[in-house]
Length: 325
Ligand SMILES: Nc1ncnc2c1ncn2[C@@H]1O[C@H](COP(=O)(O)OP(=O)(O)O)[C@@H](O)[C@H]1O
Ligand SMILES: [Mg+2]
Image 1 (spheres, helix red, strand yellow):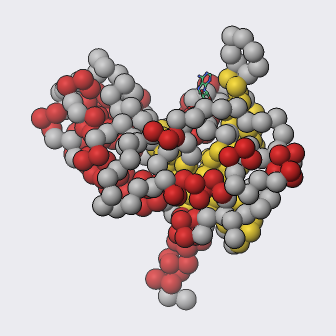
Image 2 (cartoon, rainbow, N blue to C red):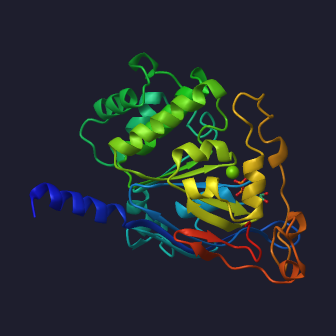
């Protein structure tokens, strides 16, 4: 076998490797009164090396809770997270600390997620300093240039910068730590439509140049579509469908996915106000399919027995007793 062939085969094998694996993740919030809120109700996820996995669902379905539990901020109530085989769950903060660098989170609101008292340069240099970098200032300036933040902005604080610039700084702060996995939680939802595409392009560039694997969370299926290799759809704390992006958009199997797809505005048509129809926050019923009360295909079976996530086609899993035909 020629060297080129060997390298290609090696790369292909490497790309199928699971870099992040989550098993039976449950996130519960204790409330002052009443039963705890179950935001995530048993999620399994495998992120392959080099892929972008989109996670989509309406507001309140548990996307952020899931994302935060993967990076252990805070750890899930129960379940297991492995990063390239190394457990992140069940560790003390002291044992977790050296692993934190390897999985980074970019938040929705760029301005409030940055320390208001630190300059752009300091925000990116701080993690480099903690990592023992010999010249954090030079490293931070190079990282800022890499994300398209002009050197003249380096001494400004977050409130003196635009949302787009702050999100670029958040991305620089994450990527400068040389992580294996980047989790982006609605990274463009708070930005003006005019800068969303530029930040999405930047994420794709950083992913390619820094060999990242990415989980991309959004309530907006249209945004997730272009950036994801596979897409997981969440409904009330569970994954109801997961598939390669092209399959999910061409032939959705869950009635909730169909509903989400129908709500994507047509190109050229006037955009519907974002979030308007996504604002729901309800509790999952104690039995049956959580979507049954909204589902056009629901039967008595759906109201009594919760469907399991099963593989209907290669790589295409759905949790539905009566999938879309
Ligand atoms: N810190 C918290 N304390 C109590 N409930 C919370 C907390 N964070 C989120 N929740 C609840 O958990 C559910 C899932 O929230 P979240 O993960 O933020 O969803 P999403 O990111 O999909 O909008 C919602 O019902 C929300 O109100
Ligand atoms: Mg959220």
